Length: 122
Image (cartoon, rainbow, N blue to C red; front, side, top):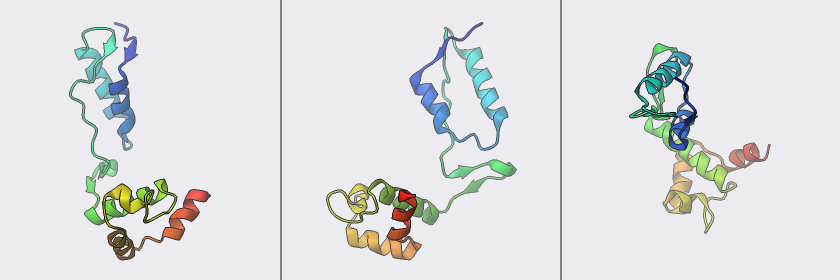
């Protein structure tokens, strides 16, 4: 039976999942959806992508530490704000924390604002 389209919501679910080296998992997800979908729109049903902090590549489960996740989160906020830490359009405001707290966390995590800006501009 031909499947004509995939809903925007389900397309986003598939795109947001990293499919860490496991094409078979994608194939099984699509096959299951084809079987359970009643009409011409593919329905992923209760498919839930694994969190971005969960890595199952290599057959092992690796969960990033809270510190690693915090560092990535701060770097992303700095990237989005062009390296600005404080002020109306700063990363601290975006993260909902005080600028001094963000400075302290950046020092503790070894994040250098200049490096984030340099990477962003390259």
